Length: 90
Image (cartoon, rainbow, N blue to C red; front, side, top):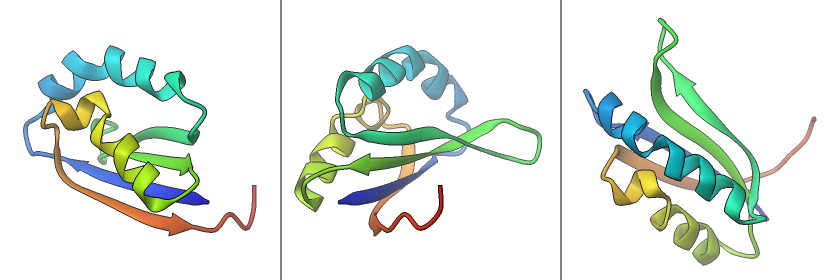
């Protein structure tokens, strides 16, 4: 099943994002669960969150993946949602 993880950074947390980015990017590639991923941007191109589509067997697996993301462990996110997603185009 595909699950969209949408996470919004806490205000003023760019330093937390940048400090933990290498570990986060490594984590993205460390499992076969990431279908696609990238940062969400503000109007000036600054990173303000994450959009990750996970390919997982079930929602608990998605939650486990999200909980172990270095960004989550560092307390970067103000909010995180996990929603089942259906690919139609692409």
